[in-house]
Length: 247
Image (cartoon, rainbow, N blue to C red; front, side, top):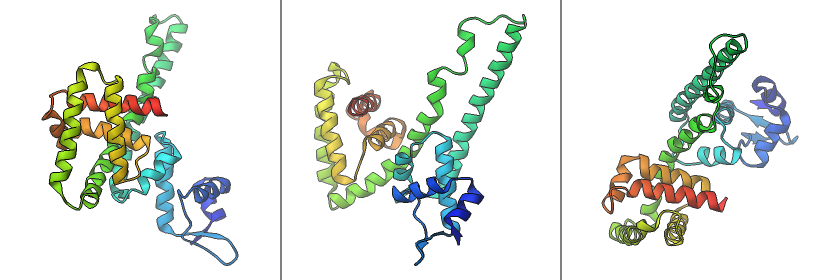
């Protein structure tokens, strides 16, 4: 067992931060002694490591908490995803280092750079690419877990589930030509958001991840394509717009 000060020393995380993680329910101690001291076992070290890895790839604490408290969350699986995302980040940083070298060379009278060349490794799209991918990656776990909860809420009445989804999708199809930003489409997305929240507590970050899952996970995209070939992309765009407007 480690006290909070011992855990702080070996992890490099301040005592104040560890206390904050406890207050928000992100990293709870294994036990609290009669003296009021927090004690952490080896499993908690792994959890803290996960928190630090998620922070390194620019996840907010609220997002980390949602992911780690999801019943489908597995550390081993998460580590593999984090490794992939870390490699993307390393590549981005290497591109920035290369860009610095090119800029220094340009300043010394070497190969002249164009205006666009100065920003080729640091434009907003490149900066956010790996974090957006992370949301999609972890969104798949949320999608899979939501399906399990659907079965519980609807008492395995698959016909009822299918009818509700089919009716909603048919209504959405009729409004597609108006665009995903239209009031009609956004009202239907709001309706779907409420349906999802009957199944589990779905905040806007998770709803956004679900949207990417509907588009990128072929197992789910195929159901949307039954209504229209472009429906997975349309629904994803509509959900992202909905979430951006609500935040």
